[in-house]
Image (tube, rainbow, N blue to C red; front, side, top):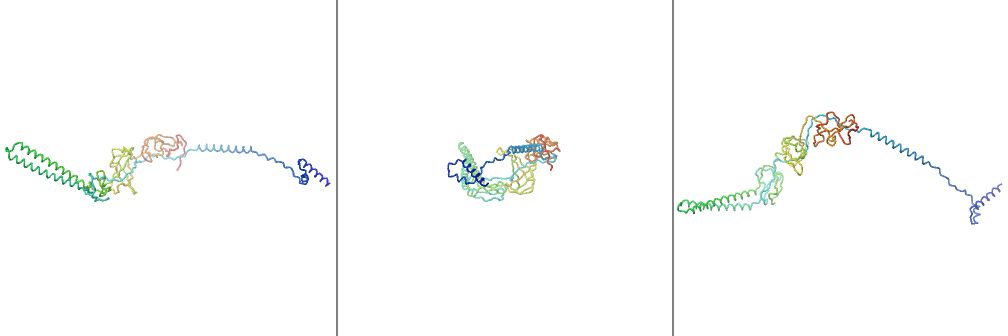
Length: 396
């Protein structure tokens, strides 16, 4: 029995080798003795159900799209949340805020009317001076000499006049013994001498006046604010020597935009606050210019203090000019206006555009003069609001 099995095995091996058709005979015995290797067959992979995955993915995207559409519709259907305020009659003060600077009511730039070398400058910044006090002295040597020359010339003219007067008197005394032509000549010489004396007297006066201008005196009493020259400097009419101001009476100088120029008038009340102070002071408009500066578009004004104040010149002052006061008026925030002539009023949860008229003024709140009634709810911010839009009032 065992022999049959072995023979069968040897036969099977011989058949297998023959089918390989190997030309080398020497390898037959090696093949017969080698263990049998089963033939390898490829195993087909299990089929993947891709179609089913695509279906599930498409279904998921469809569900997300439908959910987003529903959510957007729900969100769009929600009313816009707005803040409102109830229009109420109340006292209103319309003010114009401007910034100005402290200035003296009387301020003078002192200059020399003649050219020359500045010999002396006996004052300093901050000095208080009296009227007619000497502020500066120019070198007047040349002009002094001119005065002396004019005096000498005048003295000579006086001598000539005296001689002409004596000759005329003598001719008059001689009477008929002197020819008429001589008398007329002596009279003419006397008149000419008198005219020359008058001319030279005027020249002397002029020279003395010019000499006086070499001494510069204070035109008014005040304080020396600035010095713009030094001793030894050559000065003239175009050069400012110093600035003199009376600090006992101060005002605020400011400019008002030309858009509000017609509403500013003298005696309007004002509230002023000096830089560095927490308290305010009362004042009033004391001057309004009749001319608008073409370069800046500003109208110059001055504000006087109702009580004396001491402050350095040039100090910044914040000023509120009280232009108008109303005992009862409706006001709305500037942000509530749409294009400057309409507001949104909430009625039955709907934003209704209401045309209104307001007093155009540079302020956060504006006075409404028409189109709005007391008690109506006004949306305080018109940004993004449309007429007829559904809104919800934000309850504080």
